[in-house]
Length: 254
Image (cartoon, rainbow, N blue to C red; front, side):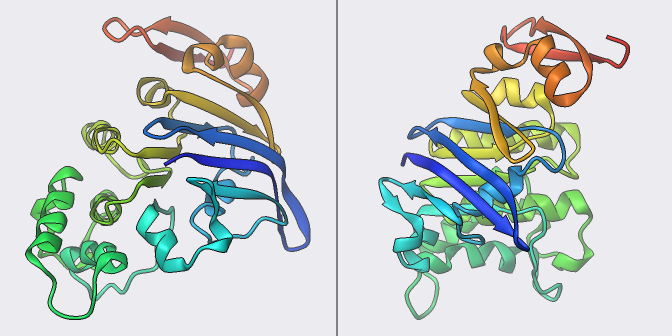
């Protein structure tokens, strides 16, 4: 499904924190939203999964304004991995992942299809070995993998990832982003690691002070001048030896 932000502005506490942002994610593409802390990245994403409502502009999924459809319908289309997810620590990891099936379930005992979806999601997120653990006993990285599995179990058409690699070790960072890409759905992700963004994203949008600063392919965006201007860091950019995508070597004296 195609996602489009058209002239979106967001207010929090009476202050305008997002100003007139327009961006799109074509069906099946992996789009990254990058920028310095406080630039509005997470706030922007919250509009598509309806935690926030724009003060102006629209967010559409498959042409439908997300504020005009039911929460249940939106949940069948859009799954989100948030930075801070409030879950009862008394749940097991598997029970957390099973909540991802709620938009698809009718009353009664979960079907074998639901159980297969949960099993597959746990495996894809590298969390199968955590299924019987209490969620409150998990490390930050383990809990993150369970929450990602929950989103996978939802079988969305659009997957929204807000700093999905937060707390993950290197192996699981790559495994989770690869699994998200392999779903074949539209992915919109806030990423702080520019090298991961270069490897997984088809297109990048740079936010700065609540506005869209620039957008383009990773090769167009990840150049020393742009990195210096928006991230206040010197950088050398070299091609990945196998993939050819840009890789950033930071230099605070550059």
